[in-house]
Amino acid sequence: DNMRSILQKISNNIDLNKEDILYVLESKDKIVFDALIKTADVIRKECVGDRIEIRAAIEFSNYCIKNCNYCGLRRHKNQFRYRMKEDEILKEVDKLYKLGIKTVILQSGEDPYYTTEKIISIIRKIKQKYKMGITLSIGERTEEEYKIFKNSGVNNYLLKIETSSEDLFEYIHYDSKFKTRVKHTEWIKNAGLRLGSGGMIGLPKQTLDQIADVILFQKDYGVHMIGFGPFIPTKGTPFESEKTSDLDLNLKVIALTRIVCQNVFIPATTAISTLNREGQTKSLLAGANTIMLISTPEKLREKYGIYSEKNMVDLDFTIESIKYSNRKLPKYLNYDYIQELGYDIDKNL
Ligand code: 5AD
Ligand code: SF4
Image (cartoon, rainbow, N blue to C red):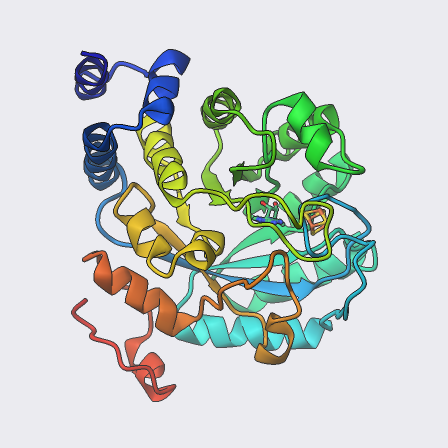
């Protein structure tokens, strides 16, 4: 039957085509689901091993000039806004460094207040003081800026395609164009930055066909970090009354992404842990190998409300997700310091 030949292809290292991916996405068969997840877990082990990569995100500004229809940070939404100062950001980075974290993600809405000069100043200071990788996630900038960021020491740039369907992209965005997003994706790669992409699953009007396409898009563009997370309707946005995404569909997408893209970083997203308390653990068992710790100062954290009821993925929660997935914590964490902070963790995990 179909699934048998798909599994055959995978074990013979033959690329899955769109029909194969669509077959799995459409199937309601529990046996197909279980076989897919198991296979993705095997491939994950072969490609990236058992250790979870922990990265930390500092959400340094929730100002945004854009109006994406799904997002709780959109400009038209009335809410408390904050901007962190350079020294506040650096203080947070220092904490992460002491924890042993190797990559920090600097994330914000599209906020022109942080000029190229301001961003570069932060990057340079981090690079001077710490041996850390830096990921920028600050929205669309210019071709020139991507190059400047690269030359200042930025390693990765996260700009999600969200969907590779032009129609759907423009339906969910109020003021972003699909062709522009693709162009930026290419600029980022051409600047020599490693590309983070991915998108939302279960968007209003999104078809399984479009989901198959967006998985293949990641492979075509050589994406290094692929974050697929569930769409969650958010109060105060045009999509507030839409349907919440389905957990199992999201797990299928993670599994297919691992099978199709192989040696890449796939995060167990904060959004999936918002959907289901065990969402991250289930993701780690379905092909994911990365967790992003939210490291925004506590007072501001709840204000970065991209979507409703956003889960607080702190170190405790991260360790719990990893523990239940029977995977290994990264060796580089500073366990003595973590215990000093009062976390009860087993070094042998
Ligand atoms: N549900 C899930 N993810 C969302 N994002 C924004 N709004 C939502 C939502 N309602 C994610 C998108 C975007 C990032 C800023 O957060 O993937 O790229
Ligand atoms: Fe702004 Fe990004 Fe939210 Fe769009 S998705 S409104 S660009 S923070």
